[in-house]
Amino acid sequence: MKKVLFLLMVIFSSAAMAQQDVQQLLETARSFQRQADYDNAILVLKKAQEANNDNTEITRELAFSYYLQGRTDNALTEIKKIIDKDDADEQTFQIAGNIYKSKLDFKEGDKLFKKGLKKFPNSGAMYNDYGEILYQKEPGSSEAAKMWEKGIEMDPNFSRNYYNAARYYGTIGNNLWALVYGELFVNLESYSTKTIEIKHILFDIYKQWFVSGKALGKTPFEEQFAATLNKQNKEAGYGLTPESLTAIRTRFILDWFNGSTTPRPAFRLFDLQKQLLQDGLFEAYNQWLFGSIASTSAYQNWVSLHAAENNAFIAFQRGRVFKVPAGQYYAKP
Image (tube, rainbow, N blue to C red; front, side):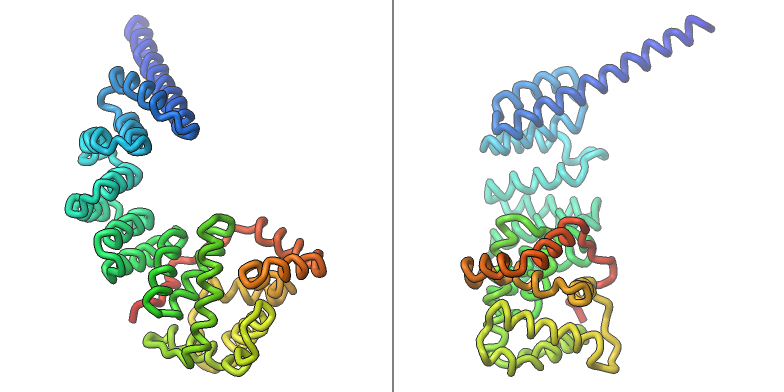
């Protein structure tokens, strides 16, 4: 009996050591990936694969390293080995999708994402990537927008769907959702090059909104949003600056929460704006959104004159995590 127990201990100990070795090799390969040293990453992963031929994670990372290196044929060969395995995760499907996207193989990419979304129906990342490959196949495609919308509905805190949807709606003249999704994005992802891009879009879309006249909505949320913002047409007549937008958006929030007996749908973005208004940080928030976009020098001057308020806003922003609750999706009838 003691011999059996000893043998079992040896077996389990060996298995644990083997697993530890695999994780060490994976971390070494990922370190090489982060340094863009793909040759060494591939070398490590191929050696690891020889000893652990059935390990999905190793093969996935090997495919990813080939993809990063631009060797898409090799990447595709590796990813095909694991895409149908039970333990193929979301990241496996994303890597495969990017490979098909880089090869402009839209047919196989379409099949892949349909399969992936059956397995992971709540994956915001996969809806985003599916939308991107559909948009690459047909720029301006409304089918791509449907994927981003579904991603927003199913996974409301995955930021990239908001980013792509805001850009898309900005190009087709759907100013309402360009504004809504754009501002949600910059709160979910506050410091990136994409954030700066979306700030430009937001500033331009506000101009378009008031230049083109009163916008209309179709769904109850759209109707209420459009009607509330349209009330500020007079204020916009003096030109749109960070200061005038602060006044317009202040009146919008006050009217949204207090100006109607019609029940307003719960919406996290407007709750945030109300909180900032109550805390005396709304002007700083609007300056952060629009100030540097309108005029870098004017924004720097505002910051120097309002250092305490600006610092308080920065502390608030960096000390919180913005999350969109499930169920606050109002884009469809």
